[in-house]
Image (cartoon, rainbow, N blue to C red; front, side, top):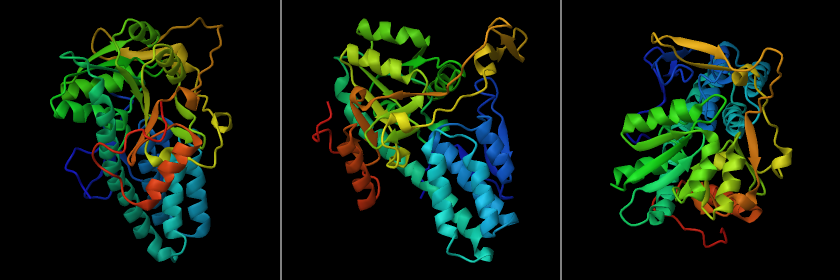
Length: 374
């Protein structure tokens, strides 16, 4: 299934997986070739690809590539463990690997590589349709929040756009669809320290689409909410626990607190594949701790146009760099899935899962929040 939109991930005529190297954006658009499981694992680990849905899709292809070399049960298990170890917090990674593994296990080794490639392609096609549906449900929730003739003022954290997925994005899909419908939109873009995914990636995406936006320091978001310059906050996520708690890029929790204090909607755009029914609550989610150098140093364009890295922190000062934080369900207005918006609660999560088991993603305005989300 194809929607005709530009994809972040594609196969060339030689069977190599191609995608943008996100560590080179926004100053250089470089394509990285992923021809085997090791290359896919490296791309995920080093954040050449990032965003929970895209990580899952790349991992699915990585497992398929591994089976071309060793399609035995042992080879399948080794490749799955290699890829699973790259990023522990985003549940889509495990979900995609389990989906491919489940497809090929009943088959004999000769049939496994082709079946795995077919399953990886199906995961990508489903992601495109899923994200479009999330965007439509999100747009239906956000459109009524516009005040008079002023642009709809949205705030987002990290990057939940098309380059974090196979196409469309999750949180930004709603922004794109509103803009396509002629709704004036302005997006406040958190810089998202320490890797600056907002300043580098979200800003690049919005500029590429001609959508009005302003990059802000992470700590400016609460002030803007207090001043009445934000109508709603919408973010993506990397995992949703069974009770509706959310793991997302570090700094999300602070935005949720500020939104609650200012009585603003705080929406989390999440494919059902990010729901981890086996994780009871936020306390059971493993938080990835990344290299402190990401915090102590910053990379950007130098005065002569070259990319340079500079040190920010004294040599003798240690640093701690958690990649994600945890937002309790009570601070989330709604989870916006491809099957509609549901409350961030155990009941809402169960409803989303039951809708997913009943059929494909629904399109249009969706069912709203009649099930009790605030």
